[in-house]
Image (cartoon, rainbow, N blue to C red; front, side):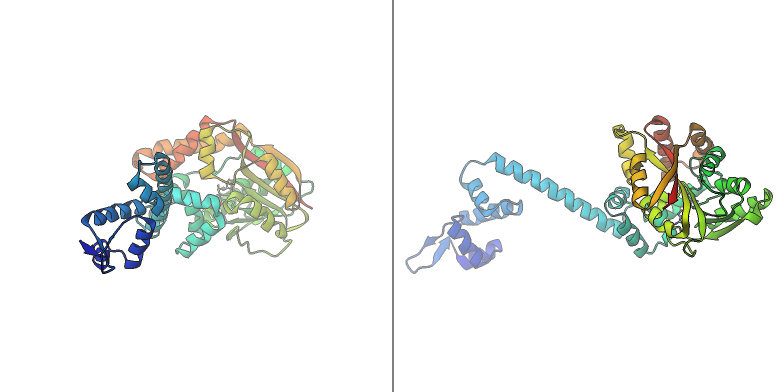
Length: 389
Ligand SMILES: C[S@@+](CC[C@H](N)C(=O)[O-])C[C@H]1O[C@@H](n2cnc3c(N)ncnc32)[C@H](O)[C@@H]1O
């Protein structure tokens, strides 16, 4: 037999707790003639069972009911499902902590956090020591803090061999240019890449073009090519971030962005780039859009992760109007514009895949190609021509 202090020591609970348990009827000490209570081995075992049930999340009254009567299945099933939820939450928290320690990549974690808090995600990546360019690449491409460099090396190995880094064609660039209701004189091109659109604009307009990208090698290729085709006097380059463009307000009558506004977020781009336009100036941009309101499950799940901000044309039009633009033109890029991007990309993938076995970057590129081939009617690339009002 045990006194209450001995019982407390045996089960690791305080005397006060045991008295409370006694009050609830969980244990029942025998009172001696001298007023002391004593407890049996059976009380110790009951307490150990109660401790385990309590740790499983049952209330003390539920523990008592479990020990004294038939188990209430409903209560236990409810508690089990709560426990599963708690474990899943804890698992997520664990994933985050291990990602912070660099134990694993946690693509899914980056995708989730990017969906719910895209700006905070980018800021956080920058705080982890990535510069803005790499943080953006991590957010959009590698989604892996530990394998980022290797991923990007593979990614660039594929893309460096290509001129065009997104859907588009000379004809579609020209079509958008023809919708501008004045003769452009000063064009700012954002995210120009190797300059596929830059050369069309330089050859087919009277404008001086400032071509901006944050990728210095791409700009160097653009400068080289501009000399070759004899438009170097019309093009100047600036290696800068689209999120912090180094130009004075109202410096341009046209801003041009093919397949790049999504990188900082279309709504933000609409808002921030507007100040660089003269009154009545025009912003031309292309973006991936939904062409259906009820996409197939697979394609919806894919873009939900790859481009959560993807919108329908109507939604983009509304956003543009809210941000102070009037839509002067909008059209879906034709099939040739996709082919102009996909065919060289697919050919490059085919030629290099044997040398890149097991590369996550190559796998992602192939997955995107497959989705685009499989669901050509559910999403597309839309060109928007907007006038600042
Ligand atoms: C999908 S590619 C499109 C390139 C080109 N417009 C084309 O159609 O081939 C996006 C471009 O944006 C550039 N880019 C990415 N982040 C940027 C940033 N923060 N500031 C400026 N350019 C950026 C990339 O280097 C790349 O050239």
